[in-house]
Image (tube, rainbow, N blue to C red; front, top):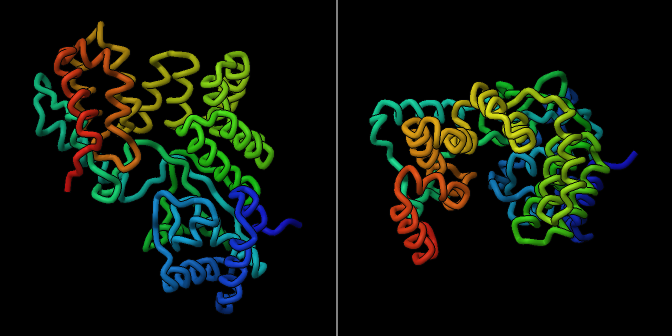
Length: 350
C-alpha cells in the first residue's frame, strides 16, 4: 500500500530533500497513545509545541514543512501523513463552509450593516481601501472546502485551538488519496491565475486521477478549458459537474454559471446568506428590474469583499463595473478604478 506521505509528496511535486525533512519530523514524533483519536490530538498538539502554526497560503508539503505552518488543507494532510507513519487509522472528511466562529461573526457583520446603513443610501466601498488577510478578523464571506480528520469515530479540527468540529453545509468522508487531489486542484488554480493554462490543465488532470469524482475539480477543469478556448470540453465538464447534484451553497453558485438561472443563486443564498460573490451576482441580475435592491446588495457585497481575507475588492469592481456604473454613476466607478490602479496597491485597514 502506498504511504500517505508519498501521495502528499507526489501531489506537491516535492523534492527528495522534503522527503528527508518529513522523515526527520516523523522520527522525532513521540510515542502516541493507542486510541486513534487521542493519537490524532497528541500529534496536533506536538506540532504546535514544535512551532507549527497556521498560514492560509501554505498547502503543499514543502511549504508546510519549510515555513512550519499550513492552512486547512496542508495541516491535516501533514498530520495524516504522520499518523500513517505510525500505523494510526484515520479518515479525512471534507466539509463545505464549516460552521465555526468565523461563520458566526459573518452573520453579525451583515446584521450590523443592515442596522447601520439606510436602504436608500448604500455604502459602496472604494477599491483603494481593502483589508489584507493579516489585518482582517478572519472573515471569509465565501464557502471553502475544508479538511478535518476523523479517528476513533470522532472528528477533529486541526487548525483551531479547541479542535471542535461543528459540521458544514455538506460533509463527505474520503480517502487520503482522494484528499491529495485538493492539493492538485489548488495548484491548478494558482497556475491559472498566472496565465499558465497548460500547466493548470496538467495539474487538474492529475488531480482527477486521485479522485475522478472530485466535484470542484471538475469545475476547475471546466474553467481551465473555457479559458483556453475549448468550449466543447468545458461544456462536457460542466455537464458532469451538474450531474453531481450537490446541495450546498458552493454547488448552487457554480451551477448558476452553467444554467444562468437566478433560482440557483437563490438556493445558494438561502443556505449561506453571507455569500458575498453570490450576493453580487444576484444584484447584477436585478439591475434593470429592481435597481434599488441591486444597489443595496452591491453596497453590502462591497463591504464584505473589503473585509474578506479570501476575496479581492478589485475583482468585485472588475467583474461588475458595468452594472455598478449604471447604478452609482459610470464617472464615479471609473474614477475609483483609476485611483486604485494609479495607487498600485490597496491601502491596508488596521
